[in-house]
Image (cartoon, rainbow, N blue to C red; front, side):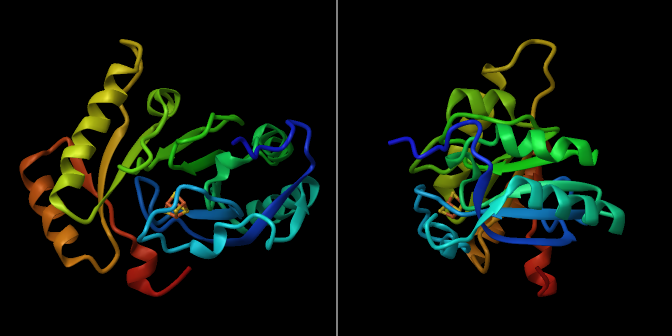
Length: 216
Ligand code: SF4
C-alpha cells in the first residue's frame, strides 16, 4: 500500500532535525544537517530508530520551516543536508527537495530503497535489507551501497546487491562505493566485515562513528 503524500504536500512528519557530523559512510566526519522523517514499514529487527516507524506520532512541519532550518545550518557551516528516517521514501520527496534547493547545499538521501524514488539528490546512500530487497531503480541510482553485517549470509547478500547495482548501470555510469558496516555491538558482524574487507579490496569498512563517540 502506498502511503506517499501527493507531490504537492507542503508538510511532512518530522522525528527530529539536528546539525551534527555525518557518522557513517563515505561522508563520515563532515558537517551536515539531518532531517529525520517519520514512517517506516521495512521492519528491521535490529533497527536503532524504531521510534521513527509510525508517521502519526511525529509533528507535521512545513517545508518552508525545514528550508529555513537548512538555511540556518548552512550559515553555521553545514556542508550538506541528509534526508533520513525512518524510510524517507515513504513520502514523496519532490516538494521537499524543491523547497531545500534555494539553500544551495547538496542533498543526500539515506534509504532502504523499497519505495519509488522521488526528489533529486546529489548523493544517495542505499542500504538494502535481505528481507525487503531494494528496487532496480534504487540500485541503479545510488552512489553508495551500504550493507549492514550481522552474519555470514549478509556478505553473500552484499555481493549479490553489488552485482545487481553494476548490472543496472549504463556503461559510462560509475559503480557505487561499496561499504560493509558491522551491526552495532555485533561482535560477529564486526569480525566478519573486517575479515571480508581485508581480502576484498573493492569493499570498505563503514563504522557508526557517532555511536562510538556517543554523539548524535
Ligand atoms: S529501514 Fe531503516 S528505519 Fe526502517 S526498520 Fe530498517 S533500519 Fe529501521
